[in-house]
Amino acid sequence: MLPVPETLLIRDSRGRTLAKTIVYRVVAIALLAGITYYYTGNAGEATTITILFNLVGTAAYYGLERLWESVLWGRGKLRPSTGQGARRPTDTILTAAPTITSPGSMETDSEANSAE
Image (tube, rainbow, N blue to C red):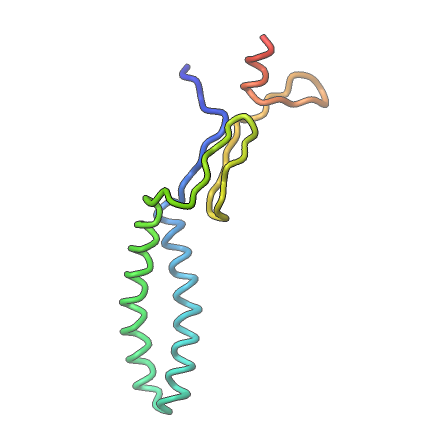
């Protein structure tokens, strides 16, 4: 079996990015519709403006999120020995799965291998 790195940094999947986009857009739609209706006083105009703006905004947001995934600026380097390194709330750090060696004790696969 190939050795597995002790710590891996996982990027957001396209599905997760899409889910975040949808939640953000629902909030933006509600705010824009309310503000537009307040200023125009016309529900038809407010609806048209809100729909057009959000179709364009949703596509732009999704594209920019995917683009930012490829930008390394602002990301910390992983420190495999400590399992630290995530700098953004969206970074997920996975460490080696724990192995139970005796009742009441657990260690990672890498710790078990280094003890042998």
